[in-house]
Image (cartoon, rainbow, N blue to C red; front, side, top):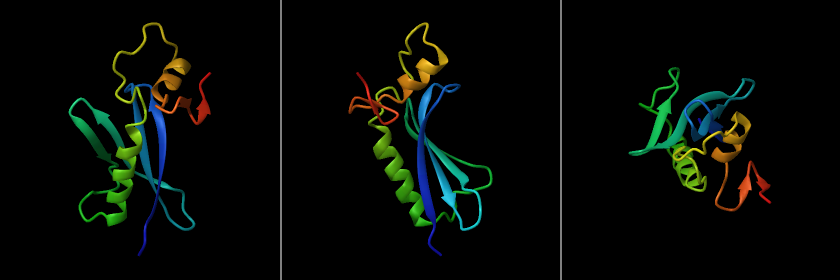
Length: 110
């Protein structure tokens, strides 16, 4: 059985970090959150959802995790370090999703 994973990148305002959320799509069902990938002080972390166990995971999940890690390095403020003082919640969301190609949430920063 072939598994279909898709990734979503977003700013987690509570944890002050950029995350990649990995979802499993199944025919006729809502996509299910499988794992959250982010970079901490000691490197990348993969938090698996309680309904999904890493043990016996399909190889496609390893590919999705590697893709998430590769993409997250393009988010300049992914670890939430040196957060600007006085920043608003919407501003924090934009700050966490600023990329090295001068875009935020896919839009050019001017």
